[in-house]
Each structure stands twice: as C-alpha cells, then as structure tokens.
Image (tube, rainbow over all chains, first blue to last red; front, side, top):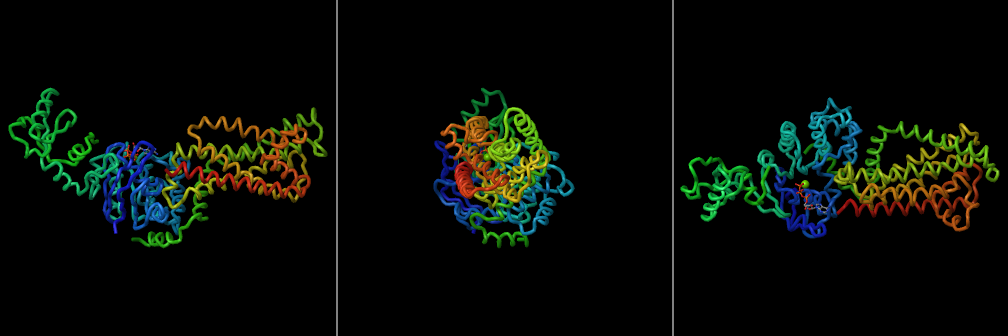
Length: 296
Length: 270
Ligand SMILES: Nc1ncnc2c1ncn2[C@@H]1O[C@H](COP(=O)(O)OP(=O)(O)OP(=O)(O)O)[C@@H](O)[C@H]1O
Ligand SMILES: [Mg+2]
C-alpha cells in the first residue's frame, strides 16, 4: 500500500483550477520531490492531504485512510512543515515543541520534546525564545516541530524557500537524515538542486497536473537525452541558431544569456558552432522543457 | 518504527470528534503565550477599575449622583464594571486575536495540520478566553470590596461563573466577526456599532429603569445587562428571576460558540 494515493483530484477556487486531475502515488519509504513552478498547485496538494482543503472530485488516500473522512487519523500519523514560518515567536523553543507534542497526543511529552530538540540540534537553545534564534535555527525548529511525534509520513512544503545557501545545506542534511531513518517524505520545491539532492523520485507538476514522474536519471534520459549543448553569443545570432535547430525538430530553450540544445547527440552536427559548451543533461533541462518555466 | 510512533498509531484508533485532549492541547498553546504577557494584563485589570471607580464612583457619587435605590453609587458602578471588564477581555481579544492568528501568524494553519478539528480549535479558544475573563472579570468586584467598602458575600463566589459564561458568548461573537472580516479595520465598525452600545446600555453607570421603554426592552436583550444584574444579585441579594437570566446567558453563549465554529470552519477549510 502506497503512503499517499491521489487519483484524478480536482480542486477549484472560483475560476482558478489549482489542482486539475492530479494523479500521484508515493510509495512508502521514499522521498518524492514535487517539482513545479509558482502556482502549479503544490501547496494546494499539501493542504488537500491534511484535510485543510476539500477536493471537488477525485480520490485521496493517506496511509490507507480515506480523506477527508478519516483525515484526523491521517494527520495524527503525518508531520507537516509549512512553506511559511508560523512558530510562536514570544514562546521558548521547548514550549513550541511541547504544545505540538500535545496537539499530536504524544504519550510522553517531555521525551518527544527532547528527541526532536536533538534532531534539530537545538538542545542547548531550548530555553531561548524563538525570536532570539537565527534564521537557520528557526527553520530547524519548524522542521523539528513537524517531527515531534515521530511521524511515518512527512510533508515538506518548500522547506528551504528564500533561505541562504548555508542554511539550506543544514536543512538538507536534516531532511536526508529523516529519509535514511525510513520516513516517507513528500517535498514540494521549485529548486532543481533540492530535488536532485534529496528526492529518490520526482513528479513534475504544472497547472495542477503531474506531467512527468520518475527517478531523476530516468526523467533526464527520457526527456533531455544525455548531453546538452549551450550556445553563447549575441541575441540575434542565438535567434538564428535557434530557428535553424527548431526547423530540424531539435528541442531548444533559452538559458539565461545562452540557448540550450537538448539531446545534443541527435542534433545535426553542422548546426552546433565550435564555441558551444557541452555538458551532461540535467533535471533543469527536463523541468524547463516540460513546464516552459525558468527554474531556479 | 520506534516505540513512540507505535504508541501514536494505537492512539489514532481512539481519535474521534470533539476530544478533550485536543481542546486542552490548543489551550496549552494559549497558556504558553499568556505566560509572556500576563503581568501587563493583570496590572491593567487592577488599575482600570480603580481609576474608573475613583473618577465615576467617588467623583460623580459624592457630587452629582446620590445612592441608586439603597446602593451607594460607588458600589453600583463597581459591581456594574464587572461587565465592562468581561466584554473588553473577551470580545476584543477574540476578534483581534483570531484575525492575527489566522492572517498574520498563520497559527491556525499549523494547528489544523495536527489531529485537531476546527470545532476543537474554536472551542479551546473561546473556553480559554472564558476562563481568563472569568478570572479578570472579578477584579472590579475585588477592587470595590478592598478599596471602596463593598461587603463581601458568599454569593459572590458565583461571579466568576457568570463572567465565564458571558465571556464565552462574547468570545464566540469576536471569533465570528474575525471569521467574516477581510480587513482588520472593519473591527472599528463592530466596536463602535456593537460593543460600545452594549457596554453603555448594560446598566453599569446608570440604572436601566430610568431609560425610555424602548431602551429597556433592548437592554433586556443585552447579555451584559443580564450579567450586571446577576453580579448585583450576588452582591445585594438574588431574586428568583436571576435563574432565568443565567439560563439566558447560557443560551446566548451556546449559540455564539456554535456560530463561531460554523463560520471558522468555512473560513479555515476551503
Ligand atoms: N485559497 C485560495 N483561494 C483562491 N485561489 C487560491 C487559493 N489557494 C491557492 N489558490 C490558487 O491556486 C493556484 C495554485 O496555488 P498553490 O499555492 O497551490 O501553488 P504552489 O505550487 O504552491 O505555488 P508556489 O510555488 O508559489 O508556492 C494559484 O493560482 C493560487 O493563486
Ligand atoms: Mg506553495
């Protein structure tokens, strides 16, 4: 039985269809990266999984439980780390955790608090008020709060959005540890690197649908081949290259100051100038090709 | 899986609607926060009635106004001010607190991601405000006893209960308003059009029976007036009709608590 099963889920907000026939299952014990541009429906999907949003149609099962009917039971067994910090800032680190241990009905609140303090490496700051913590500590606390009851399933909504690289690395270490410990993780992100580093499998979502799904390596091979070539030059030259390549049916995209040619081995050699830079195809190539969005 | 999560898995079998443990967990969050600001709240809860009683009670009482019935004016105002303390420590914190927790702090998003339902969340919030108001609502009475010579009576032990029941209702009102509000400025209208009039025609500063008949009917529908009457009953002797007043307050609270649950469910779950 998969940890999460979504089939044909639709969620509308008035005119907007945030989730549009989304089908996805997350097997137990893996970290699945939900990779999608802004507004793709990642947060809405997370809210559907906690019963905070009710689907207009489709089926949702979490840990074998039917949602929204059994969502309370499901919530008891999953931990949620939100996109935006919602800690109680005037309250101490340990009190923040203790409240959530009680909300999750932990049988031994002090033990649960100690355990999650250790995971987040915040034991020596337990008496500090949240507002006295550094940005990185706050984020670690937010993560620890979602883990206070040792959940089987963890939902991470853009866990490192807007953080500086150092803090991001700290969090990646924590998330990786969580995965090694056997938890199932559903992590939304629009950072390619985050998905590449942490996710066993990736589901690319766009406009409320899963448009590709698989192991990062498989997705790259399937959608972007093995080699990508980047051509640099003045814009009018690039436009000319692009036009010629596309006439030959080659997949080309803008990549900042350059254009990127996907699946470069298949492209006619004479159309690739000598100064072009060749590199291994990446998940970013897949993402941009499928969603048409520039990735971060 | 560790022993901890097995225990959780076992616990989930027991999860049902409206659980006392969910409610007490949400209240524990309120307590944790309250511990950071209780001194200020306590200080103003003592000082405010004292200032009012000095100004109105002694100022007016010794110059312009004599006794009300057989009650010295300062004791009349002192007992009446219990209602003032209750509405200002329930409706306003519920309104602003709910709005801030929902829109700015996103506290409710965090809580509803745990095995807690909106109904339990709202119940915990209004109960906590009720308890707090039940406690602080008695301060004007204590101030009147200690500094202004009101005789303590056994019946006064019921005052925290009267306050709490009323406060739960006004907390429900505040939560309902916050559930409907789009912007925090809209609370100005509610304060001016609802809370201030309720507080003025509660019989705190002047007896209702001197008002035109229309006002008297309105006052009867004002839960704060019923609270004032109950507090004066506790201080100067209950009447049979007070049982009816208390039942009225219980009905008022129950209705607004339910309304708050329904409106918040609509607001929080989309
Ligand atoms: N409560 C709501 N009311 C109206 N529209 C909403 C609501 N929640 C989400 N939407 C809309 O649904 C779409 C999907 O939003 P969602 O937040 O799920 O995207 P996302 O993938 O999480 O994006 P981001 O990367 O920006 O966090 C957006 O167009 C958003 O504006
Ligand atoms: Mg989002």
